[in-house]
Image (cartoon, rainbow, N blue to C red; front, side):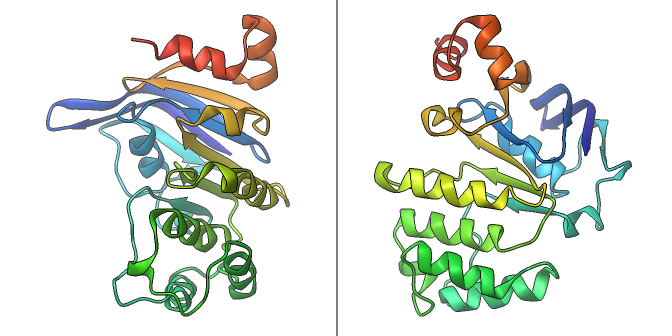
Length: 229
């Protein structure tokens, strides 16, 4: 589905992503793991077509990343991206204007399940509810690839399992999901593939179950080992 070869991104001489070669397969759930500043967000923004690589190449189903791939790739950023005047209902209309695959009925269903109301003002939401709003807007698209950057940030521990289950439902119809996170415990039980990124490099990548068997450790324990300073 997605192939990255020798991908690199520099900002003012600082390398955020360095020599990443990676293949994302259809219908799988990937965890992009690493602490803040490891290059996860930069990689996602390049795949989403928001940032151009300094060098290397990317292909989505044999074609270049660009205007057409944005119709098929749904990206949820860590930054807030709603105007202050918007209500939850306005956010849905905003998405419907931009994305042909946005399903208002699905959005309304997700909003109700996440304890939000259509009349709520986006600017007045707590960090946890704002995170749920971003996720609802993203998952309401009928995309082929979902890129979710830290979808559990701001979500209290009680609600995280509910959020993870909501994300899992989006994996139907052979959709592919890549979730970046440093909250590994919640993701380990649902992922097919783990990608560990450190200082812009992939230091370990593979089928999650095979990694556990080969290393004799859980994904959580490997995370602690790789990122211990």
